[in-house]
Image (cartoon, rainbow, N blue to C red; front, top):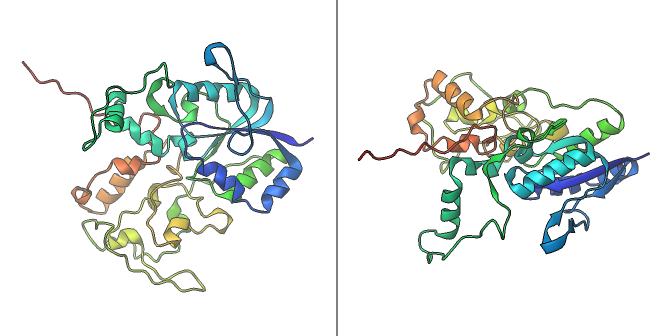
Length: 314
């Protein structure tokens, strides 16, 4: 019997689903042992609607549920719970689902601030109103990772997850084998040469170009971005973006790691760990323009919150 797969996308960009298609010929192999029973972004599936256009979430039973995206409104929450009820096993599919992802940057603001920024930006006419809860699903108080609201069985981070890992996790379910990514950092597989010490005491802006010279055969020869003074989140980011080849994709494209696979350990705090790493190497952290972006992929689980409101005294 083929395993039945269902999928849903919540507060996400659909990049994770595109990564499924990036499996190439392996997608045909996947379809030999799996059948897709529900996946709105890959096939024509719609939810039933009841009276007054109210949505009735009725999903088919499935062995595996792939949920991409975080939870930022009541509809996302209902869909996540419906998937949990209809699927035997839930995979948090991508960093938005595992750690909040890019959408969780919204956690630095209150909902009224978000709506005000979207509908009353500088240089545009002031909007008469913003969409009400009667028109659009009500926003939740924060942007949540999946496991903050439902039980998750497998965590597959990445923005998006590498096609190699997508195929391997589904194949492991078919073979009744366990799957997990190793708790290693991007640095563990980075081919950059390192001297073991920082060469600068302040960080450079990314407008400058790093030294880059790679041997075509060994893929080695360039210097560590951090040791050159460029912020690279590799030391505090889970390895995996290189798939089976192992080589970090962004770094091999001459771009420092931005942390898309989330913290090395699930409960980690990339922002705190990176600041500690910089300070322990005598780097002047005041040379950073800001530090919020260190949580650009992992602001869920309460790690990113609005600043407290300070009321002026009478």
